[in-house]
Length: 460
Image (cartoon, rainbow, N blue to C red; front, side, top):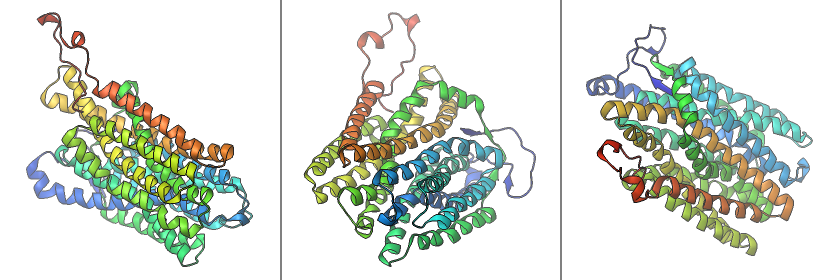
């Protein structure tokens, strides 16, 4: 929800950059690229750890055996709270970069990760109340906001021709924090260590990320919060349509990341070590393949890739339902990992649709050249923060659905049936809004004086 301003800014001292013009190739080649890449690297580091802390409780619940006195429904409720807060804080985190500066906010947001980690370290033992665990999980939600502020910050450093690569690398590097914390959890469980060992490993890395951000990163003075663009984005129907579709892709990715190990443990009786052996595979593959979804969207159109991806997600979910009913662990695990891969592809393709949609709207308004590009950047940048926040709420819905399904029927089958229906709705919305060709009577003006640029999203 921020956009670079061309107005001159007074020097604030420290590591503030008052002149930043990445679109100027001479400036970029001589000065800008080196600075931008350095900030990207340390932003990815902080965001990566943020994702790990956000999804920390997907591992912690594997340590919580019968001695903790918690039901499977309680554990799904715990991870739901982390998902909820992580989605909500994405909105203020988006605005924080312009208020505090990218460097300072990265330091602050990294330092805030100490709160949930130290709190969990203090209370992680049998006899602790469910309410206390819920509060600690809510604190872990601050890690979910790091994605929004990191994407906003890095967006300002790179020229338009480099944004896709930079933002894709930034997002992918952050998402990989999910399987990494699960791999670290696997190592701790395999070494017969306790949950406090896992937390103790992350505390020094959080401190290191904050210190490196302070020493190595910069802030751009011209980045301002464009509240007008934010209001326009909220009023635009496509912001909410894309938020809905992003619930189906990223919401599925983060929701399943929290739930996968717990489902294996609860429904199939896997031990913590057995569950941890496979839990990380899905999030890892889903993270790594996200840039491929963006590349396919560039080549064939984001709407087409998203449409076919929802078909594939529905097919994978159908197989999971069959495997769940037949109690086939190998089929269930294979199909679930395939579903993870598809959520990653969908993350890339849906996110790539957003700028194309607002470019199409600019063309429909009769705008051309830089005026059209400026309109598209302004609205797409403003909408991305909101879409990311709403999409993350899908993770909350998935974990609450699993909780209710296990309470009602003793397995996750009911939840998967609901997910299958939702992916069907996502398919219909994608086709109806972005791929359905308008009728001939709607696409031809009756006279030259009535002719207007047509709003078409077929190539989005």
